[in-house]
Length: 284
Image 1 (cartoon, rainbow, N blue to C red):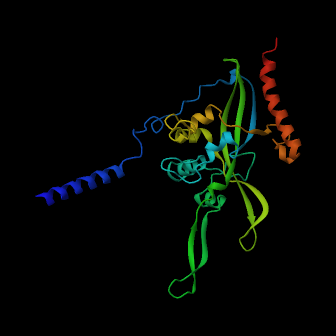
Image 2 (cartoon, one colour):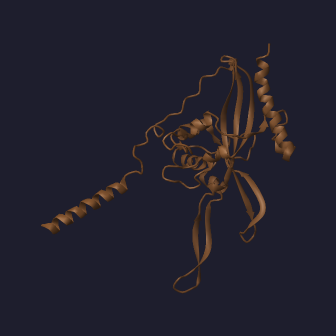
Image 3 (cartoon, one colour):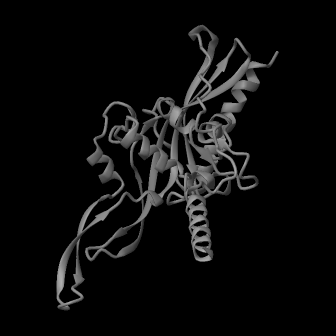
């Protein structure tokens, strides 16, 4: 009888251990963000828009304020970074990706999955491995996944406009373009000193808002008080610099006519002009 009792106790403890392993590593179930819906845009009349400009903004994910969009580079539990969420939406939620071939008409040519994989340098590679039994070199095909960890910048297309009905300057994000930063490989597949930047695709921001609203953004100060990716963009908690403003010269970008410090000064000049418009509208 004692042996049976001990055996039953061991079985009970084992069952509890297995049950505990199956539980989430949380003391409560997170329901707020997964069930959240994005706050809809307010209706805008054309007659209420006194002034508007298209603005391209460069967001560097390596800056401290923007790092929450870059990390984790690989999923940790339910946590994903921005680019992984967008690619998940493209693969599973019907989100559309558009080609960057026409830089002035970003949302015209829809990309296929193969084109998206090519933009992120994904594909199949054949490598030589050593057979552990014979010691001979044999070819082996490996899957080269999307290099999402190389996405270190975002190009945002925004529309700034003055709403005279509420007497306030407003801004809405229209599109997001992830940018890969990587070193060029030589003929032997070894990285060189040439640092390249490549625009991968455009996604229409209003289309991905429901997806962003259902994913938590990491809060470095409090794990139980997190906001969604959609809130992060709508509340404009990111930082970046102006890359271009719609202009008569075919909406040319700053890097097409100036570089270095002069480009940064030109970006600050454009940024200041946007704020001056709102200030001047309040002049009496």
